[in-house]
Length: 222
Image (tube, rainbow, N blue to C red):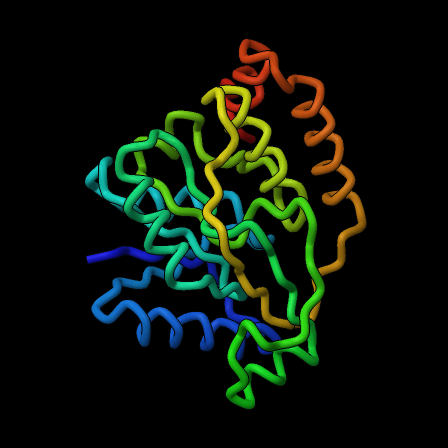
């Protein structure tokens, strides 16, 4: 049985996207186990939710999908990533194109248009949305940094940490993921600025495993 971890805190503007993601998995991978994960803190912490989801998996060699609550993959590259992640020692991203559908493309999908035919904006450099990995691989570089609170940068920091500490970028599989429209989160303010400052420290340690390890395995997370 495949486990799909979805970080999720209910919000009215996001409910339809979440429902569409769940429906896609249930239709395309019957019998899938879907775990929705939230943390008790008042500010949603996406990195912590992803980590909590992986901590809930007992078998360290089990392949798990961590899937954002607004993002739908293509089936063929997802299956390819699931097969490869069992033995590669890397995290896999089942896409080479991250397509944001926006309000118009999302409405088209809701009206039963095939995802591949929906209007979209290509998001260059995307490195989140859908992760395929095992707990052993996830913890080999300590998952994602829970000091990134709120929104912004946790995926980019994870990406450079993965490449620096594991010696390779996350492995991609040719295909698309589709991000559905919802009310955007504000990416400004003191917490966003703190996230940006922490991200700058990650960038300063690119290609320096010893320095990167100090960020990835801090003595304590406040």
